[in-house]
Length: 388
Image 1: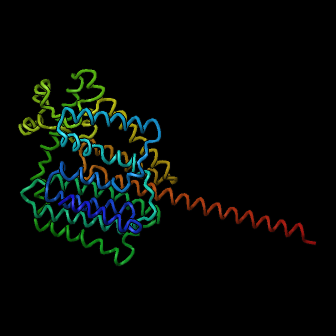
Image 2 (image 1 turned 180 degrees about the vertical axis):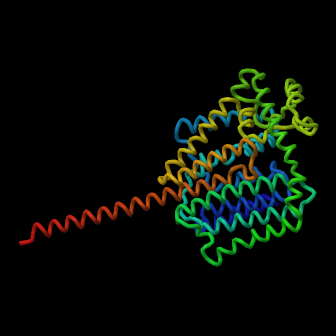
Image 3 (image 1 turned 60 degrees about the vertical axis):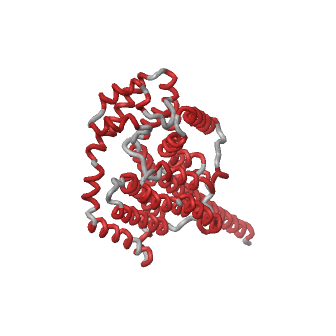
């Protein structure tokens, strides 16, 4: 069913691509994926499908035209191939996509996409508002589930992308135009309905009860401690190049004693041996691809920050973009998002590309104004020289 919906989204883009553009297609894919996630409750099936269809129309924009890009591509291709030989295909694909999808899509595809037609900001905001509403409805209908895969992460990544778009809208127009007309005020309706549903079904109380925040935080600390103590005890080859994507930590003999040392509860003691990837994205990269892989991803993320800084000529908005990217990197220390960064980086791509177009338009208008002034002065001089 998810594949059918995804194919329909792709066909919709093929038919209406001249009107739809990049960002609206990404939001359509994200909405399809998040609704599916509400009912299936597992990332292993839905996220790889979402990843493929998010990138599919834009593969022609793929670029790896310098040494660093080729190095990253070849290195992680080699790690994935080795991982497929020693681990299950499903585990390898899901762990790789969950942790690295957004960063890699931005670097190789999204940053090179040609945004011929741009979505109106209030369209983006309406999509985000509706996704929040759908998430709350899914939560209300699925009280037997913890729904951490949907509610906690989904609202987190929606809020992250939405705040960036709001900031950009305010910077560009010097006021938030999202709510400047009657139809745009309709944005408040899905958010209001979401609030009513949360109150009606005691959603917030159920969240704190079902998500077990204290235990969840303790498990994250246990995972980080495990990686810190486990990796130095591995052979030099594994320290440098990792253990492969999708490798359960329980398969290593030395892991048992370390698990007993770091586990904060019986639940963690039971679950940790089955873990293939950690909540901390950076720990997962270190565990799966080694020190070399971690250094490459840090450099890759640094290059994304440089792209954003070059696009923003205004220092105030440059600080907003920098804060967004630094905050996102810090968030990856604690959690992964339901969209694995694809939606967040799609919004970032939209902002950076629109900034470049805005800067070009300003430079063009300035150059035209300057040429007009030069032409006017030249004409005045010519009139002066010919006057009797």
